Length: 144
Image (cartoon, rainbow, N blue to C red; front, side, top):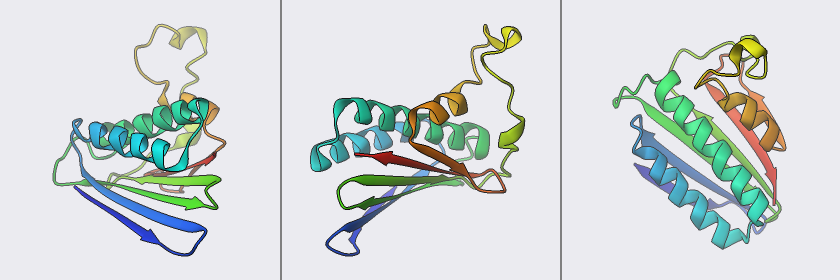
């Protein structure tokens, strides 16, 4: 696992993380978010949204994207602008998926399913959520 921080300017900081595709990597993401909370004084509600979204996105990348193949990496990039905006990107090395064809977790036939709510939750908690065309990268925006 590698984490880097680069101060691009007085107003912009970039962070990069490379994680192995194993579930234990989620702890690294949680610790990273906890450190960001302190450094940028993220309000409690926003912190909860960031932590939930990044946990979901990372777990999806590990399980669904990279199929828990520890030889594949999950790449997390973060750009913090003006100490007011955070833009996360989570990328896996998998084949991607069609994010427009996900079953609706609120449909009656899906209500009792134990999985399938992650993207739904992310879309409701992030200020903005954008997928790349391939479907192996998600970009999440938050105001802090």
